[in-house]
Image (cartoon, rainbow, N blue to C red; front, side, top):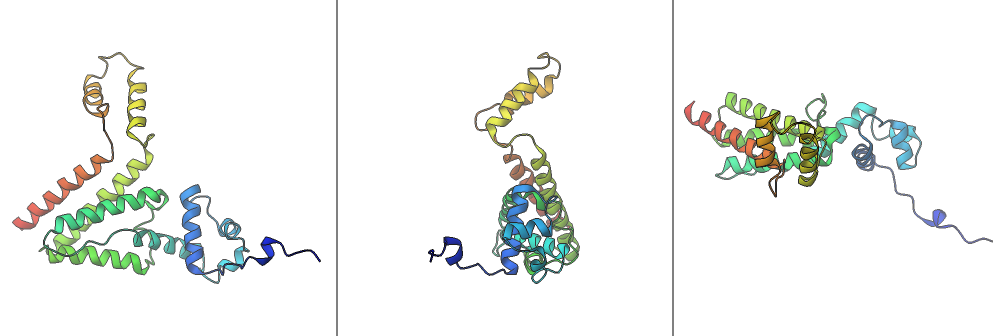
Amino acid sequence: MAPPTKRAIEPRIPLSRERVLLTAVAFADESGIGPLSMRKLGDALGVEAMSLYNHVANKSELLDGMVDLVFSEIDLPQGGADWKMAMRQRAVSARRALSRHPWAIGLMESRTSPGPATLRHHDAVIRRLREAGFSIEMAAHAFSVLDSYMYGFALHEASLPFETGQETAELAQTIMARFPVDAYPHLTELTVEHVLKPGYDYSNEYEFGLDLILDGLETVRDTT
């Protein structure tokens, strides 16, 4: 009698909602959200697509769960005296999560059945703003402007044709080499005096803009 194969003696990992969602997120991270289907997700899990419906009712519920997982990766703003630092850390953490999961950028606020991590996140942001002295109306304004900046920057960054500082410099040099040096003087000046400087990192623009917004919100809060 032939000995059992490795496949035969390995215990099968039970299918669960968490495993389905984690696999779906990993699939989207690698291939994007467009190609994701219940059939392809089933293939990735080694099961028939129909088995997935024991854990998610449909693809819409699958997307809800995936977005909720991304929200669970974002640091909640902590309490304390420095509300600006708390909101800054939350925004920086959000950008990192969206960098890991760029497919999620357009989905984070689009779901009509948000999960517990999503609701917990929103509630924590509002609570921190209210504790910092923002009125209900100003808390709504602050929440909106911060999230618009956060998602907008993430979307813009995801569309850029470079990732590292070196790639940025190489692309800038390639583009500028196609034109006379005096054709676009202000663009050339910015590129030479800023983009091509050692240590340039486009991601630093995020925190610069974020600090401007937080400073502005503080000024408005103190004058209303």
